[in-house]
Amino acid sequence: IIGRTIAPKLTASLGQQVVIDNRPGASGILGSAIVAKSTPDGYTLLMVFPSHPVNQSLYKDVPYDTANDFAPITLVSAVSPVLVVGAQSPARSVKDLLDLAKAKPGQLNHGSVGAGSMGSLGAELLRSMAGIQFTQVAYKGSPQALTAVISGEIDFYLIGSAGTVGPQVKAGRIRALGVGAKQRLSILPDVPPIGDTLPGYEARGWNGILAPAGTPNAIIGRLNRELVAIIRSPEFAKVLTGEGATPVGNTPAEFDAIIRADIRKWAKIIQDTGIRR
Image (cartoon, rainbow, N blue to C red; front, side, top):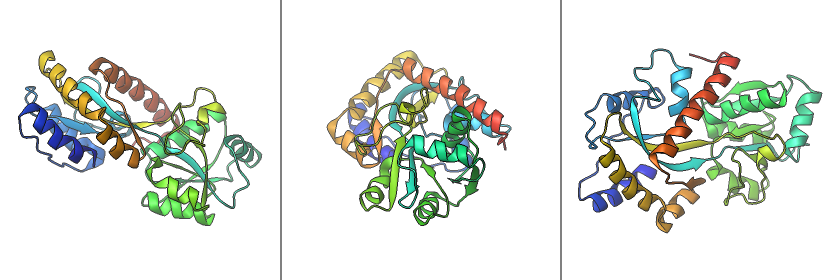
C-alpha cells in the first residue's frame, strides 16, 4: 500500500515514470540483493521493511552488506508492535503481565509468526530486559496468533503492527497493554509505551527507501526532498494512520543512523537467543 501510494506522486514530482517491481522472497533479501548490485544512478530504488536491519544477523550468507551497500534516502514510516492479551487474562497492564511471568517462569506462552519478525524480536527484547521466561509458540501468520490470544490458547502476543488491533480492542476481545514505540500512538491513544514500565524498552519497525551505495549526493538530495514532501502530506498521513503507521520523512544521515543502530540492537538479541538460521 505504501509503495503504491508513493509511486504516482513521485512520478508527478520527478517527471519520470516510477514503476513498482515486486521481488518477494527470503524476507526481502532477493530484492535487496538486486538493488545493491544495480547502477548507482538514482533509477533503481529499494523500499525496505522491518526485516531489513535484521536479515544480516538472522540469515547466513546474505549477499550484501546491510549498512554499507546502500545509500539511505529517507525513512518513510515507523510501525509499532502492540502487546496484547485476551479479555480473559488477569493482566491489565504491562506490569501485571511481567509480574505474572515472574511468578510462573517459563509457563506463559507468546505467539510467534517467525523468529525474525518484529513481534518475536520485541518479545525477546522484553525477555532480556525484564528478566522473564516464556515459550514462543509458532503460528503461520498474525491472524492465527491473534485468534489464539483471543481464545486463550496463548497468554500474550506482541503483534507487529497496531493497524489490526483497534477493532479487536473496541470489541472487547483483547486488551492492549502497551506499545513498543516511545510515544503513544494516535490509533491507540489510551495505551502507554512499554517503556513507561520498562525504562529503555523500544521495539519498532519501519519502512524506508534506499538507493545503491555510490549514488551521487545530488541525486540522493533531490529524491529526499521529493519523498519527504510526499510523506509529510496530509493525504499520505491518512493512508499510514489507517495502517497503524506513523509518517516520518527524515534526512539521509538520520535514516543511516537508525539503520546502523537497529542492526546492532537486533544482532545482539539474535545472538543471545541463538535463532540465527
